[in-house]
Length: 303
Image 1 (cartoon, rainbow, N blue to C red):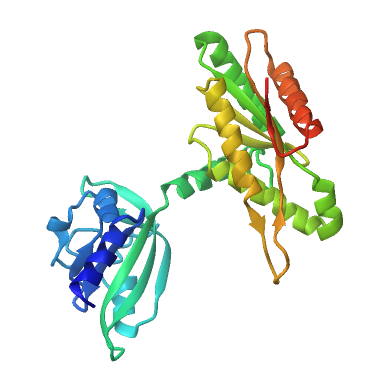
Image 2 (cartoon, helix red, strand yellow):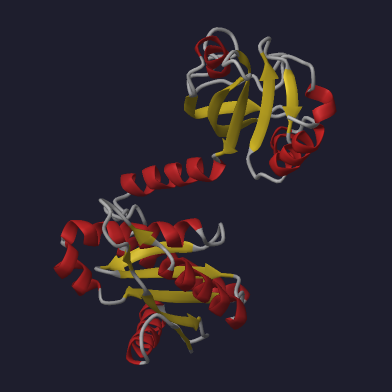
C-alpha cells in the first residue's frame, strides 16, 4: 500500500463513530483512531507502540475476569486467524471507570496470507445496556408490552400522570405523539399475523432508537403507539414527529427475496394545556391522529 493510500484509509477510519485500533503480532498498538481516543480517554501518543494489555483497555467480562491474560479475543485471532466477536465486555477508561462495549476482531494478513497483526473495532453499548436494564425493570413491574419490549398502556398512564403533574408545577413544555400504523389490517391479511408482529416490532424499535434519551415510548394497544415528549415547544414536537414518520416510512422487512414489507404511520401531535388530564390529552392526540388518516395518512397533524 502506498503512503497516499495509507493516509486515505487512516483518514477514513478517523471519521468512524466506533473505536478502531491495529496491533502487530506482539499486540503492540500501531494505529489508534480518534473515536478510540474519545471513548477511552487515551490519546494515540499515549498508546502507540505499547502492548494493548499494558494497563490501557484491560477488558473484563461481566464477572470481572481480566481478559488480557489468556482470554483475549485479539490474542486468539492472532494465533489462529479466525475473526471473533465479544458481545459484552467492559473497557477501562483513563479516568478509571468502566464502559460497556461490543468487540469485533479480525486478522491482518500480508500478501502471502501470513498473519502480521489484528484489528479490533469496539462499539460503545451503553445505550443497549441502559435499554436492557429498563426492560428488566418494566418486566418486574408488569409494565412491559411483551411483543415490542416497550412500556404498555399502564406504563404510559403512570408516566403521563407524573409528567402532567410536573407540567402543572413548573410549566415546562410537555408534548404527546399518537402513532397509528396505516393499513395494518392489510399487512396481517396479506402477509399473516407473524409478519404483522414483526412490523410492530420494527416500528417500535425505530421509535425507541431514534428519539431523544428522555422521551418515553409505549404501546397503547393494537397498532397504536404513544410518545411522551418532555421539554418541548410546538416546533420541536412537530420536528420530532416528522423525523420519526420519515424513518418509519423508510424502514422495511425483507426476506427470502420477496419485495420489502414497509409501513407508514399517521401521527397526532399536541402540547399539554393547563386544563389537561391524561384522558383529555390522549383524546386530543388521538383525534389529531384520525385527522391525519382522513387527510391521506403518512402525515403529522399538530393541534
